[in-house]
Image (cartoon, rainbow, N blue to C red; front, top):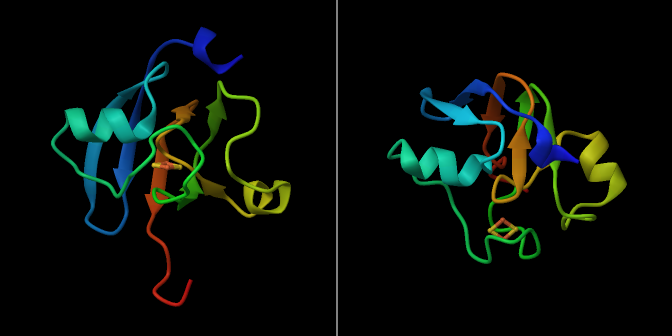
Length: 99
Ligand code: FES
């Protein structure tokens, strides 16, 4: 499972260009907040989809069995940062305005 990975990765929030270092065992939303970067969130457990964003580059893993994403959404690069654990350097993108 994802929590067994270790190490740190460089994460970029593409809309602002903000960057932060993320621990492999810490969800991206929490590592962003620790770096002073506030991303949208609500439930923080992978169900409400408020934090939904696109993974432009990189890889993430999930400790929960089935975060609130369809298989199709996952394959399209959508992630839930409140429960997504980094597994490489990542670039995250915001929702398009028309979503
Ligand atoms: S904050 Fe609810 S799914 Fe991420």
